[in-house]
Image (tube, rainbow, N blue to C red):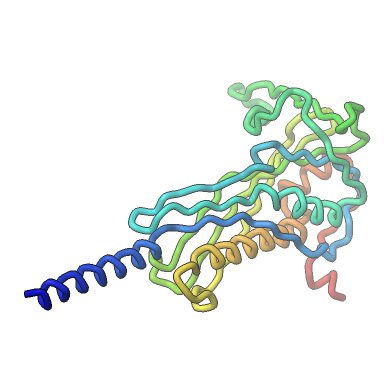
Length: 254
């Protein structure tokens, strides 16, 4: 009787231990990404531009609960300014940090100026930008990056071997008077093979690496493709940039 009872208790304890480990596998992940990117090898555009980082971008955290897989938290706010600064410093002759005088609502400036003859277009309200010391910025135009969306996938969802991350950015493009002239989209993608991360705590380091690659991919896409796209060419023409020819990675290597 005692032997049977001990066997029963042993089986129950083993079940609880297995359940605890399985629960650990489904507890999600939390990562805080701090990453730097190499300076892009591109010919700088002959223009002085202001760069505005809103608070939402600088403190961006994506948190999502996956049913049966736990809560996943990706903190990428601290990496935004260093990554963009490295890219913009290479892309333009002169880069000036700017601040918004009329608050820090990232959606307040999203207004479509419409096209000629469009009776439905509303008159856009200019956004006032200054240098951090309050003086007017001596720039031809201003870029304000923001994050539109962050998505991720884990192997247990997709059946693949990879943790994957997508980061969608929107760059609002202004003239020196704060009139919004257009926008430019950037999407970065990164992945990490789960086979490179062993143990029960593999989710966090794998997701961290996938996010780092997504940030680096976005930086590369922006630096090498910006001046060759219609949206950016229109903006550069309107703000008076004098260098409009495209630069590709192949041209840089020559």
